[in-house]
Image (cartoon, rainbow, N blue to C red; front, side, top):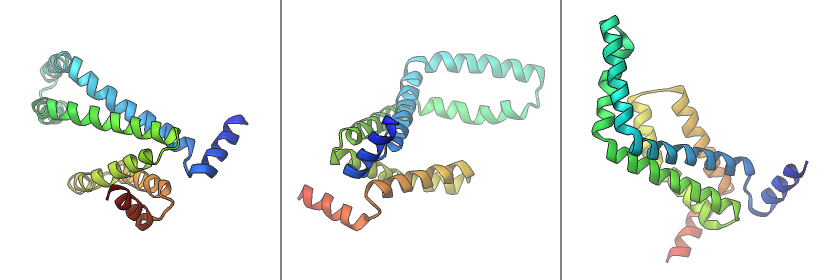
Amino acid sequence: MKFSLIDKQTEKEFHVSWYIIAYKLCYGSVEFLSGLGLAFFGRQMYGIYRQNVARELFEDPHDLLAHISQSIVPGIMVHKTTLILTLTLLGLAKIAGAVGLMYKKNWGVDLLVGLTVIMFPFQVAALITHPSFFDVLYIAIGLIIALYLIEFKPKAWISRVLQKQW
């Protein structure tokens, strides 16, 4: 009951839902912790992976999943530093944006909408190269949240951001 009243009050004052804050906070935390996990435990995880794939291929040399993962996982390890930086920075930015929304700050909205705009071309390129229903769903949710945060008025938001900077 009380959560509902707080949610309605926040929604009325600042056009932000606690569900959006929770979503961005959780998703940012998962990205940040994944980046840290890869940084601290990447080599150990890769060693365990190699042992398991070798054992699996010894048992069944035609294992499809083992062959597919052999073409993906080593590429991840080659670009490990870039992946770690991307995950940790993106996770921290989403956490910071969620905290900004929690405290009803305009920079929180600007940060989260800006991240959505910046990441959109990369998400569309990934969707084109590897179509997936979940990628379409993720992009749609991100766009709907961004539009909701700016009250479905992108022109007004762009002019406000440009006026504030210049």
